[in-house]
Length: 244
Image 1 (cartoon, rainbow, N blue to C red):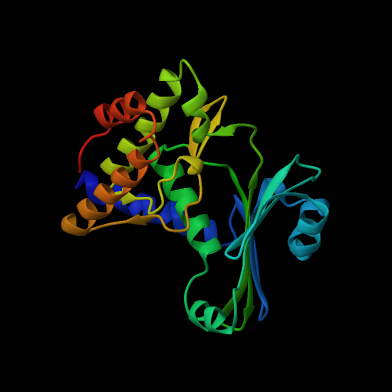
Image 2 (cartoon, rainbow, N blue to C red):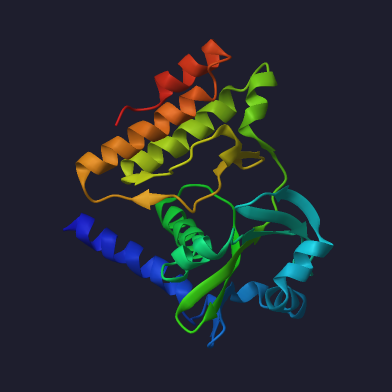
């Protein structure tokens, strides 16, 4: 009974992030779907939401690849990170048009983790460019947080606190029936508030035990391969991570 109520509360928590309410401003028309934290619904952030590509061009580029472009941009609410999920070609466009965008999935998973008490980047807004119900380009915007990614642990002499912080996230996701789908070291950001997990567009919550265990086992195997060059670090993570 308690588990059922928690599931309902979690579903409601996530669904509120896609509609107009006290916490969110939501605008939808034939060509766009935009949702933004109401606290960030300011003139300069609205300008960014209206012209995200121009904002990326003005910003500091963090990543430029076939699948995504990421930049830090300035706003009256402080620095923000905007991630554009790129369309690789007509075939890719056709495959993406009829399903939720990766920005939509990242936005939903951010609030899933928020409900679960698992640290990730603080969300600001999500944009889907559309033609009616068909999706095109999409954008996911978060607050910028200073920090190195977890690959820097290889160079650190004393990183026990960071190691424990990362293991806590992975074990918390396991307990919640969640798999990440791409547990690279670079998908953990080491901040002053502890580790934060990022890149949530492949994250899934599983209801079937067999599928969940397989996905979580693959997550941990993928994660431990990051540390194969530092056996002591690999063993420490292996000791801390609970087997699915």
